Length: 581
Image (cartoon, rainbow, N blue to C red; front, side, top):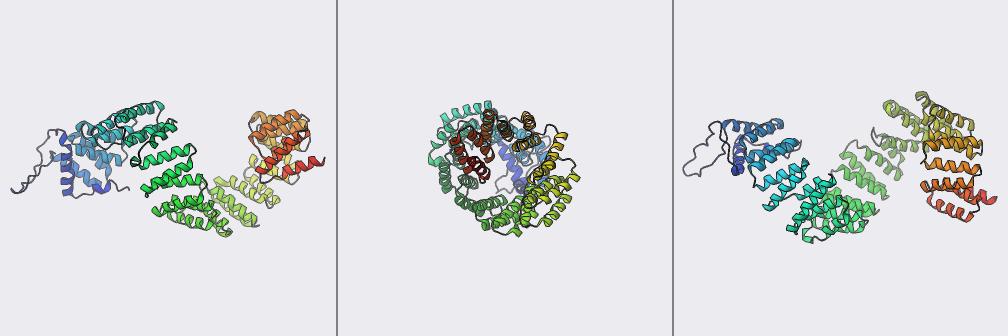
């Protein structure tokens, strides 16, 4: 449990009486005490030479209730402490008791009671800047931004410690009308207090939320260096980065860290900006400094591990990721990336072990994909089958995706075994479209056109609006230059279902090309290429252009697409075929 309230509550009975209750009476001296319902408890007679001690005007019942509250706090019975303090705050109207009740309510997350106590404190001590500030903060938390602003202005007039920045933060995510009202109030105060950096920061924050980022940045840049604080430096850096001035943002943060070297948030922001700039060496240095300041922060250790992994330093990544897992046992993100780091270091066994240890969560299926691919690549298909079978038994909710992951890994090394695994999966998931579609694609790779068509027609019979199956069958018929009228009908059905899918638009262009409708083919393929500029669409569009006599444009298109693709085999094959003609 958080100790921030617990420690002050652990008082002896005498300390509770003298420090808490006498102190309460002293704090509440600005308000007239209520008439006691019973005779007050008198202090013991003091020696004549000693200065007389003045105790608060509390009845015996109030003293007993307050002492009970303190003892309850010692014993972690904060519910009892809160009830007693709230009751006595309302009964005694003593400022100190009210402040204590508000503190307990805040600690317990009792926001309604905290607001009540803050406003009661303002009522009994209307010229106390601490009471006014507490009232403003509680009103802001409750969404009463206008009233909060009025109280904080009174704190400013009394030269008390203000929190206009908190009010601005609370109003930042509200509606535009509230932000505009707050901005007007802040602008008026800035006219009266032009050197108040907190007012400037608060104004800039709201301007940022309004989308007026250039105005916000100009305000902050006008502040003298002596007025720079951590919040103003960080907001200025974010505004610079938002405008694409990331290097200047980093420079601003570097200057800020010279003045505030222990500011974790500032260093973290700079590290993230360095990552965005792909400056991994500098980012690693900043994250290492953060880890040194916070050695048990699992998130920082994880991030530093990822930065080192991205920076091609797998051994350093392994060290930090292992530390992250030690600090946060069972951290699946750390374990998954630990597998990647071991793999990058050339230790496949350690990688497989790390992925195998990842339990249910966001990284479970991705870890199993990596595991499956690693085992399949080594030819350990039997071991892969055993692991996946065990996982499907333990995690039946993931049985289908685990089958699909296993099949994907097996496809690269043994299509026959991949088909067998799908056949097994279909016994558990009869007629499942994903399994049938995957098997159809594998049949097509094997040249078994009849089986390919049969699986797709099974899907379409069960789900006539399955655009993916309609498109796959139609495109394949068009690509083989077979039954083109049927191919066109299938693809047009798919297009009617999903008119924005670039793969379907590509198929539509390709079937029109096969039918000899070159102009329509070009229009569809240009549309598809704009949405999905991959090598297959480029190969199709280039072929249409070539046949139209636009060979220079076709060659230029192919060359540009080949530069963007790791695999340009289809483009090369298309070009060679056409040039040979």
